[in-house]
Length: 237
Ligand code: C5P
Image 1 (tube, rainbow, N blue to C red):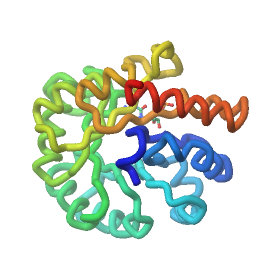
Image 2: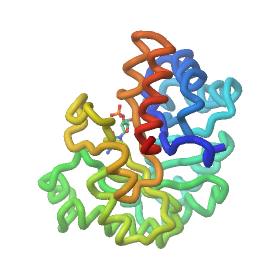
Image 3: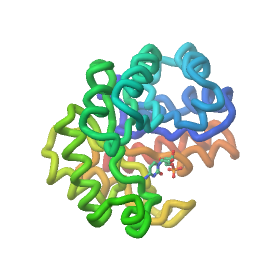
Image 4: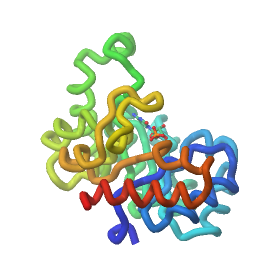
């Protein structure tokens, strides 16, 4: 199913389960997977994910950013795997053994490793013990996650080229912080990139939220049209 659709993952950032369900219904022609984050999981839990599953056969991206000792992460992955997500995130900084444990526990799930949170500045990174600059740290963590068996990396669009060069062509790269033409600098995303530029730099999938979801306030058709327009922009047509 994912191969037929544009490589867009919609960030389902809403505290309303019914709205989440409707967003999937309205946009599914243009979206290959739906990203549910910690807020969704903390609010609705596994039951909420199951409800979305029952309403649609859309692929899900569970952005839980797991980070704990390998045994605990393996246990969490075992439970989450029962929800059959297409993607599940873990922190690469949890270390090689932790990433490997997640991969071993759910071979059917694409374990996506988050490198460096883009909210962290160089000063923040230094404070928590990272000696290198953010980009070098991100490339190093991407390599480590790749060697540990992760099949995907989540990174800022501005890190894609360096990470792609560091890990080779096969690793899936997922990039949030993407803004369609004419929307650079909108919202709280400070260093954005257009969808085409992110794809030509080496991204496999783009995570896009508000550029699509904000149109819900003017109706389902407006949101669908915006998803279609962004899908066209991504495919270059
Ligand atoms: O609405 P917007 O397109 O900015 O949504 C982007 C999504 O990607 C949000 O769910 C956000 O939490 C997530 N994200 C991000 N930047 C990162 C990592 C994740 O924007 N560095």
